[in-house]
Amino acid sequence: MALFSCYVEVERFLGEPVKELVHFLVCLRKKERLPVILSIASFFQEVDHLSQFYSFKSKRREEFLSSLPVSEVEKSILWSLIEKFFLRHSENSSGKPIPQDDLIALRKGRLFEELVYHLGPMEKSKVELTSMHCQPLVNRKRVKLRCGGLTLEGKNLDVVFWGREYFEGYECKGNVEFFLELGLRGGERGRKVREKVIYLDRLGRFLRSVFKESRVFLASFAPSVNLERCKELSLSFVSQCSKLKKLHFEIITVKDFLNSL
Image 1 (cartoon, rainbow, N blue to C red):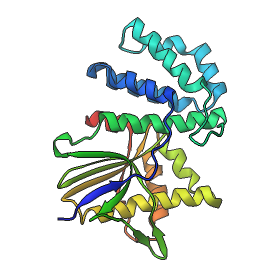
Image 2 (cartoon, helix red, strand yellow):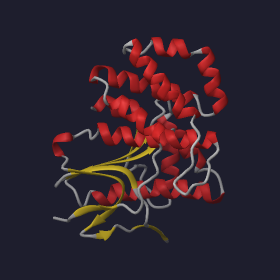
Image 3 (cartoon, rainbow, N blue to C red):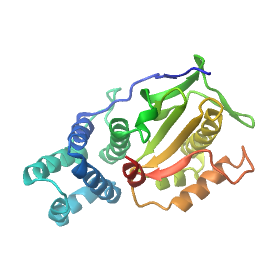
């Protein structure tokens, strides 16, 4: 049996606003935790820019908080954490300041990664080990994947869980549909999106030779996305590697993830 492990090149910078919000959410009672996370995911899908947050705060704050199945004290704490999430300025790990709108988008992805890490996996009884930002190793060698003349290496998955015969891996995005639409663009950004999708597909295919059961997910924290459009875009990106109209990874939303727990 092949030996699977992870190489973690660099731990990602995770600011206090994300840490504090994650810890609050995962410590809620289970019957409250899932609906609160889903409500926040729907709220965050609507708010990408600082100006949108200020608008939401003035017009819909009370409506949002009243819909949550937690105490008034917990609502007050939660809103304070949400304000820090959107308003607190920060620098990245290199010390360079990040524009606030870019920081909001970055924090959404980090928040989802941390939630998956703390709440997952779907198949808890089959999992023995877990890692974040995992570059897969098989028999202590980094996995190199190919698509025609393209070699895919040095890439990772945000969160992975595995056991002797089972693998479950996640690439987490704030909004998967927006992410995939970027792949239609030219330039380096569009190329990186297309290569990531190809990587997920090739990795999903490869891992079937390593594990008895394996699942790779491209997951969206935004719950209201057009999954058919996402699949269509993904298939167009991987078509250079395979003529089959089939993806070797699954596209899901935070709602799908939470419903599986």
